[in-house]
Amino acid sequence: MKPYTFAALPVCIPRQVMGKGIDEQINAVVLPVAETITSVVFYPVPLFGTEASAIVLWLIASTVFFTFYFRFINLTGLPHAIRLVGGAYSKTSDRGEVSHFQALTAAVSGTVGIGNIAGVAISVTLGGPGVIFWIVLAGLLGMTTKFVECSLGVMYRVHHDDGSVSGGPMHYLERGMAELHFPKTGKALGIFYACSIVIGCIGIGNMFQSNQALSQFIVVTGASNSFFWDKGWLFGACLAVIVGLVIVGGIKGIAKTTEKLVPFMTILYVGAAVTVLCINYQALPATCALILQEAFSPEGVAGGFIGIMILGFRRAIFSNEAGLGSASIAHAAVRTEKPMTEGYVALLEPFIDTVIICTLTGLVIVTTIYDPGMLDKGVAGIEITSAAFASILPGSPVLISVAAILFAISTMIAWSYYGLKAWTYLVGDSTPMQTIFKIGYCSFIVIGCSVQLDAIINLSEALIFIIAFPNIVGLYLLAPRVKKELAHYRKTL
Image (tube, rainbow, N blue to C red; front, top):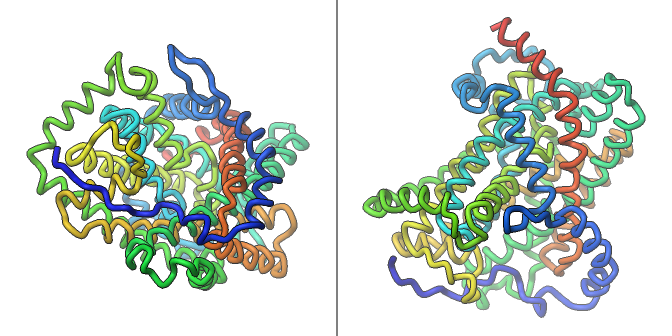
């Protein structure tokens, strides 16, 4: 491994820059609630000498079940998915608002984020190279869950008089459960899901992303010498304007942006990673052997074989959000009269996010500067990835920071739409209600760059993952309907 000296790169803006007082008061009020919900959602379950969060086990079980139930459509359906994204079988006369490609890029923009850069680095450092194997496997299995939830998103979407559509778990939980003769339960689950998304999008999809974008911008512009070092609110205002200009046009405006932004930022990051691996190709054979060896090692660094597996699955699930149902909100806007088409397209989302981007991040780290003790030295996740790239490509930390900023912006854009659709599900689809949400959402971007509301972010994360419980229940109950629709679709082809 090549020696590398880590630069002092800030990952979160210091509190003296963010401001004091109001954030501490808000944290004090929200913290007890956040801790209570977090303890329930991420309740540790003993498992063969290690521990795993109940929510992670719940999501893992669903990915395995759906993969077998739909006979490995995550693999057999990929060629058809690619044809659909390329425009095959598409009709401009079909109801909906965006093309298959635009729906895919809008959803991918919500999953490809800071976690692909920093989260993978932390997982690989904690669990060793074997984690990469389980990240890939979890990504492949998660593709089937995406297929189910995005198919349902289109099957049960609501068409409005102005031609717009609304879809997602809140709709297929309400309408699907009503078909199963549980209308009150379905409505209650839909409301719970929508409320969780509205609050969750403010923290994880908004404030955390803007805070991370600011920290990376400061890195690019010279750390403490940066003009924005003590003007986080100004940077946040600039981000709010950018995001506001995009989301004011609804899903069509978002899709027009993401269809350009997502390919660019993906090619930028993937291109840099592939370049590093090509230059350092001699390390690849030994790295691949090490990954397979440690993936099944009985004495791994993270609780043995089971511990490494859980760590890999957790990283993949947190990255691609398979089982949370959020992406189906974006996929539901597609122009199609056949719901299965978007189910197939959704297969590509975890494949791009997890199987490709997360895997490349892990490979770059392991083939360059991998050291299990990096986190103990106080090195943050994104610093590890930046250092790995810089060990082969001098100056690449700037590129990584730019990619991180783009990932953060794209996530804020996508989650604004998720939050908006959940908000209108609760209060109505009128223009004033939409405007209220958009203004409030952009305001929290500024707040995210101005104060550190850690308790709200922790609460948001817990609420985002707690929705997996009702969502997966809905997927299990409605899976036979998806299977029936799939059989009909295949006959029509």
